[in-house]
Every structure is written in C-alpha cells, then in structure tokens.
Image 1 (cartoon, rainbow, N blue to C red):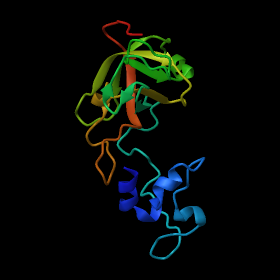
Image 2 (tube, helix red, strand yellow):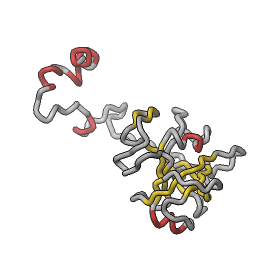
Image 3 (cartoon, helix red, strand yellow):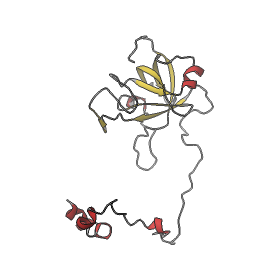
Image 4 (tube, rainbow, N blue to C red):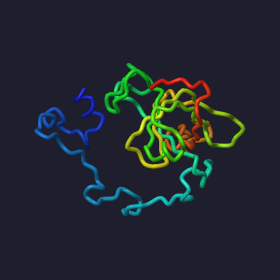
Length: 187
C-alpha cells in the first residue's frame, strides 16, 4: 500500500517505507508552512464572502430560533450506527437527544429531560419535524443545539446547502422547539 502511495504522489511520499518508521512521523511538504504561495501571483489570495450573513435563508432576530448542528456518536461510521450509546457525551440507550445549553433550556421554559419536537424554522411551505427528542444540558454555545444524524436529517431543507457543491448543510440549521405532544420520554 505504501509503495502505491509513493508511486502516486512521489513528491510528497518519496521513500515512504523508510520514512514510515521515523519516530514522530514525517511532515508533508505544505508550501504555505514556508510562506510559499502556489498561486498565479505567488501571493496569498483571500476570497471575500458575498455577505456576512451565514444563513440568508434563516430567520434572524427571533429569540426562539436555535442553530442545530448534527453530529456523530462515538460508535458511528458515517450514517452507520452501531449502538444507541455515546460514551463521548455519556448517552446510553437512545439517540433521540438534543444537547442544549442549560441557560437556553431555562430561557425557553423547558426543564432538562423535557421531551420536545424540533421544527425547521425556514418558511418554504414544507413542514419538517422530528418528535420525541429529550433535552440534555450540555456545554454548547448559547443559541445552539446538537443532535445526532441521520436521526435529525429530516430537519435539513434541500435548499439549505453549500453554494458550489450543493452538499446539504447539516450545520447551522435554524430550528424551533415545542413540547412534544406525545409527552413520552426517551431519555
């Protein structure tokens, strides 16, 4: 395998088998580390965003809107889930959890362990909801929540995507929370 890597990228991985055993590994040659800019003008070039608004499709100024980031558990590879436990976040037996700052729990009138429904806060004529989510106080920035994917994928609007690649944006999804009508607990 290392021979194939060396043959494919000889400038970076020359003598790979010999250097593989080097204590501490070896550094890849990254030109920018040496202030060498492999650009047409030989200078660092910066791209200026079209706007300072990260999510122009999302409501702003609404205190009830939170920013959802989806994440993996420790026992997950991409969308393949191997268990309902997450030792990183001390979750056992469920993935129907929203990690939220304790102050946001109080500000929104909930208590830790409350079961809620998350609804996407983008007005595009489609209702997107995931019910049965238990609130868990967590060290996360105010105004943000975290939850597992693929369970929360239904909250991602198709139009909420990266501009060039069109990859669905599974971070910074604007959502609102309401008490779950079923009143069940999955904590």
